[in-house]
Length: 184
Image (cartoon, rainbow, N blue to C red; front, side, top):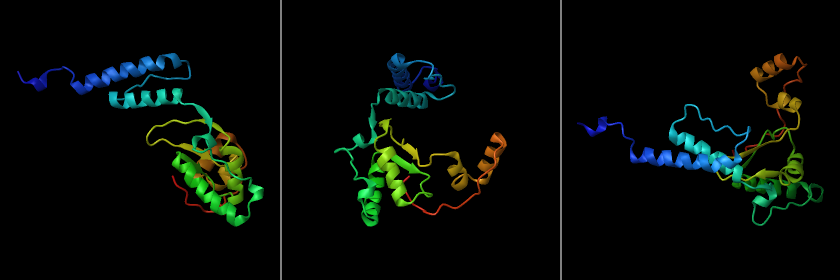
């Protein structure tokens, strides 16, 4: 009898099954209606990665983003900086945020000073879960209302779909003034 025709699991499959059982046990205390551990048709390796990411999320502390840095990232108030100092500090801060897996999106409608204010006022003090999962980033969308998104960032299909769903008058589509090439 050829051994390749047997249906016994390989050592790797056994390890994956054991890891799966351990992950499900460790997730049990966190289970409620907000956690979906039904993994459908995922293969075992993908399911384990998914369960591990859920467990990392549940265990991660919620901290102000400024506290994700050593030392804590403190910026001077925007009004205390001249344009040149602010621009230099903004660029360095964007790189620091990226180093902690914070990606800024939809910034091209904002001046440098406006973007710096958002980082200073909204992003750094915001409590978020710091999750260490390879390849995963916290995406911060730098617009406050749907009109801004529709005006500067939504493509024609998204604009049409939004108009059909909400039956509203659309703002004119415009190109953002401040084109940036941010890390992503």
